[in-house]
Image (cartoon, rainbow, N blue to C red):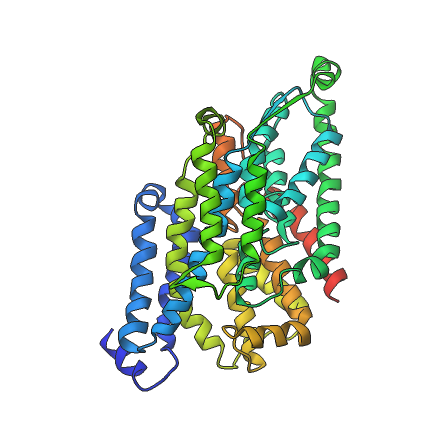
Length: 434
């Protein structure tokens, strides 16, 4: 550490070795739940915060760069305020389903989830809809029902707004216009969601044909839907208003926007009846895990971002190359830091600073195809494995708790990602980015 501090004192740029905590944290996030699940479950917060403090100490005492730490703190608070508030509010809405869904109803349900993911985030939509999804298919549900839910609702559906998926919200915080994603990503969204729904319909139709006759003829004629807590939709509207509040209105790292979002979540939590939370099996563990892990992510990624600002970039030259590269890493690492790393690399190659909103605005205008490639790669390929995006493991855990068989880590990739998801994403990427 002495060597690193000494090296830093002679340069405004961080020592390249300080990328190690970032790489270690991403490796732990990817492999910890598989290789040491009990250790990771009890100590992930210590690992994330510990590695983050190594970087924070380096920036404070070595680089004397408190500005970078303050900026990271502000982005972190805004990020967690959005993700956490949408999670809490969606937990106050309960959907109960009676009856067995036909393949057509299932397709409509997934399409609604894909749209909803852009309004309450992929995490919120996943937590709101996974239990009704399991109930409405309870007589014939198999692993592919869970996998396609992860593909569409937990990932690919959320690429139309910055609210939809964490990478896009980080881009918004950096200066990407809010409506840019909708105006530039809608074609890819239609193609990917449409293709996945078509494949799902074919598989689900075969599954439905094998169901007992009484399920096909009786249960499907007696579908009943019950909704509780729908008034929370108004609080989601409050959160959306908060997104558009000027990020410069703040007290320290806490912006007025974050205060509005947190306030809406607090109102939702304390005014939602307990039996609604119990019906949803609501608890704070998923959002706590996200909060602790992103403390480490936002801190440890500082050196990587600063080094990429230097203009060296990476050995990629076309939008399609960025799409595949950012997508491949997003499938096995957290897609939010992957998005920001590739964005910083491409902007650095053009001598632009990802931390400067004016530079980001210039990049959006001049190099939009590269931003589109990184955005689509991070969001779409987050469905490539259980560790590509936060909701994936949450959905798997809820399904297993409901006694639904889900494929293992390797089975998910070999049985579904490689033969179904990847070909769809490569074809759509070629059509959109060529």
